[in-house]
Image (tube, one colour):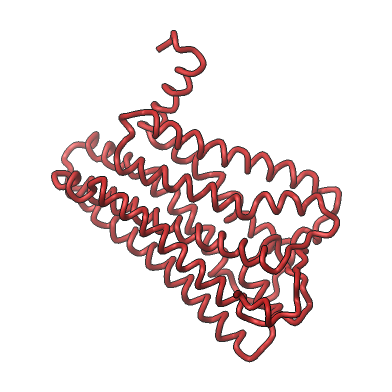
Length: 316
């Protein structure tokens, strides 16, 4: 369905880490394994805490729980395969598995952006329209926002994957990366419509990300204007503290996303491209639960309460 009948390539070979000395690969494996396990554990702890603490049963933490689920699936689509390939002497991936990996990468990447946008809207309503918050952010409305974020991510992920794998891959089959991403795969495609497809996919990704980013900026423009009208410094600090963790994650997410789409064209070293790829596939999901746990006072207190209740209930 994804063009496999039109391609003479049945598998791809990842050469992303071939630019590094072989003796460094076990160190990379250990580092990425620890970061991956911490990412999974951090997101699972956040989800369990939100589920178990009634005080966190609010729209903001509902969206955070959905974001954690999205990050778990996002990393699951890439990191386990990377860890296996780091220990392999011949890291290959089948044509269909490559398409599935790309679908997961873009689906949950877009979903992540949509959820961050929804969380920005949630903070806008909470600070700028507090009296209407319960109406505008009703349980049904929040569920619809999360559902549409997932549906939108799935549709865009399928569009990108279908467009790329409708191309013909005539060889060679060496992917200059450690996962199935668009730029290195486009370089392996052949045919008259390759440039057109690459341009269309690039515009789709950039337009979607920029639209989400500007919607978040638009929300924060109103948020800042409202916070500045609060007379007391304590009130301003309290209002801004509810947005701090979300704002930091937005900066990290879009900062590393710009590495993909806004980096200067021209010859790039294989090692440099590989290391840049780890920033948005491994480092960003690793930082997200840390930022939300440390910068959100309510969540931090709930984590301590939940953790202490499991280890030493008599201290509560």
